[in-house]
Image (cartoon, rainbow, N blue to C red; front, top):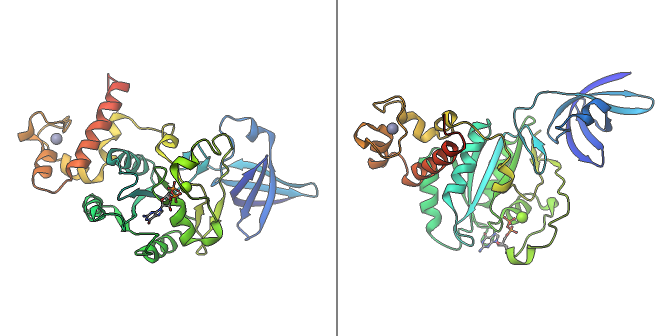
Length: 301
Ligand SMILES: Nc1nc2c(ncn2[C@@H]2O[C@H](COP(=O)(O)OP(=O)(O)O)[C@@H](O)[C@H]2O)c(=O)[nH]1
Ligand SMILES: [Mg+2]
Ligand SMILES: [Zn+2]
């Protein structure tokens, strides 16, 4: 019997494609003990595979650094959080929730602002996210402005087994942009209104798409915030470190338990930094919204 280590790149109907260290992709079934556990195999998982005359079987799964539930995808390195300058108008608290969840789960958030052909607001959003310290790219799939830079970014960062996925509200232009970068993906694009009701009940399968430098892009239509709701959410005490732009200032607040919520503004270094233009107002507002949500979930923490 031959043993091998590899990564699940596709899973459909109990058959998993595993890209093994030797470069071969083998079609595998999973050992019964793996299938029975609550969290089944995820695309993105590192696994051990044994092969004999009857075929290949996944024997064990290595610990995941993170995972998304719908569609199931694990060990994500980059999340391309996409917002449009308009149509739909971005909800920055949603964008910021995604960045916080990404940071907390050891995923690098990258902000992609689409539809720059629609409005100059793209510059305002760019400023906010650059100021927050995230890599930020602006593009238009219509005029093609900035699309090459997005492609270069994706190709130069998704290397050595790294996994990236797109996230963002429906209609922001994720599929259009992904198709522009990787034409062979051929994702469905279109009008939000026309899409409603269609494909609602079809299971979404995720597959890892090799981007050419040893990295992978998940060929999902993009995660939305809904998909994050079950995504290993964090404790109130972890929140500040999920906002790197606030975190550096918070150590200078007079009181160690400062909530940066507006009371005692004189003593709050985060509030001072907002006043001085070092922290974006919208970022602090998002922080406070999440703080209130987590507080109401866990009133004793
Ligand atoms: N004006 C403009 N419209 C775009 C751009 N990119 C995509 N769209 C349109 O936005 C709509 C939604 O695009 P789609 O890629 O399906 O969005 P998704 O739901 O995020 O995958 C479609 O009608 C696209 O033609 C862009 O750069 N500029
Ligand atoms: Mg789409
Ligand atoms: Zn404070």
